[in-house]
Length: 334
Length: 214
Image 1 (tube, helix red, strand yellow):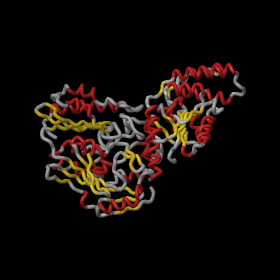
Image 2 (cartoon, chains in turn purple, red):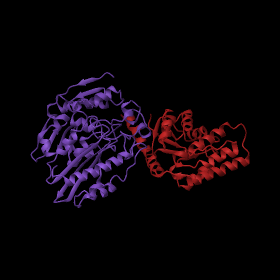
Image 3 (cartoon, chains in turn blue, purple):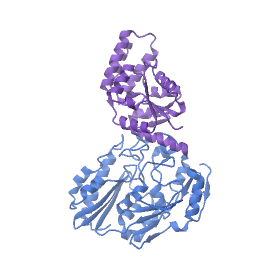
Image 4 (cartoon, chains in turn red, yellow):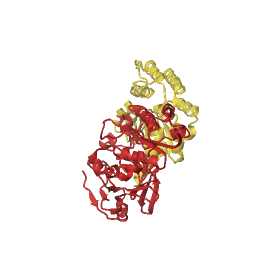
């Protein structure tokens, strides 16, 4: 592992100043469950200057706001999110998803901000191949074993899937993220935070956060009444694995009529993939298990599987079917 | 890698899927090689170029006419990739100079460019006849005629021979990875880069600019 320097700022402003000073050579260090592995893997893009934000007080909280929503500090541990009574009461689907992130040990270390902004886990990148994200100009996943970590929905340059579960589960709640930037705070939707395979500061990354910006907070609006939600995740092992495919879905009902919905797939694309074709199909329909066949037919029409991962599309459609069946029989809850 | 100012294309396998049969027939009738059951037009084409390169005699006029005739058949049977026009148009709008650098005959290249209305996208076209050579010949002729910088020029190819030709000329060899299995073989020859689809080229160019500005 290369020599590194660690800064321990005590305010967001100080952290931004350090990040600005060192440019893309610096990186935010919180839980370390992604960053330290990137360093150990000797990846070209791993930072030399770590800006440890754990000593900044106002990044670590879960609190209800005046509008009935919940604000989560970016440095809050995944385990704290997963065990929060407030979040369990208001957003049980999100809590369910966070309980399926990684292992209990890693959930104790990793943060919600880190989960949202983590680097992809393509085995070629992590194995030190000189790919688009590691100083090279080729995607080995597109031509190699792409059965697990790679997109079945096409790519831009890098074909790795976005690996996080939290973003997939937050998008259906219309959650937003707050960034601290040199020009002041900026707020954007989670969907816009992780649009997948972006060129930012001369690098390929899954999110839009620049080198001198810090994700400070996740804001989830107050839960809407009469919303049913589900999260399902298929993974190679029963515990501790990334999604082969996942689905976070919310259905807003008037009686049994679906008036609005969010359908977001994880593990199949370079971003949490909001499937508006299915959302449009569901609008105005009466919720029942028979919707599943037509919903599956409407889903993922732009699928572009690589050589070894066409089954991801079948898995994703299967999750859509099982999610609709489950919600058609469940009691109303978000 | 420096920001790129020019891209050279071998159309066979990079801009269109060419049938293998006409190239295999040339190899059989002119060079006496048994036909191989290759389905790849690119492999058959570069195999033929190897035969041409290693021929120890001047070809007879009738043989040259046969080659040209069968190459025209290949052009007629070629299926242009759907992303050629949008990707090349975007590159041209980015002020990237585009050149045809092919070992096909002048007649075949003209038929290809005009048949698919591609001529306006290219700053020039060099072929076997006007460059007086194959493989390295069209690349070298392009570089000399357009006064291009070697470290700012790419040659796109989908064969190992093409990568070697580009490397020998001093330009960046970029693998066009149409097929995953062939892509893995190409990647083992250390190309300067590789793309799965032509629509990735503009982003490739933008990333190089951004990397160099960092």
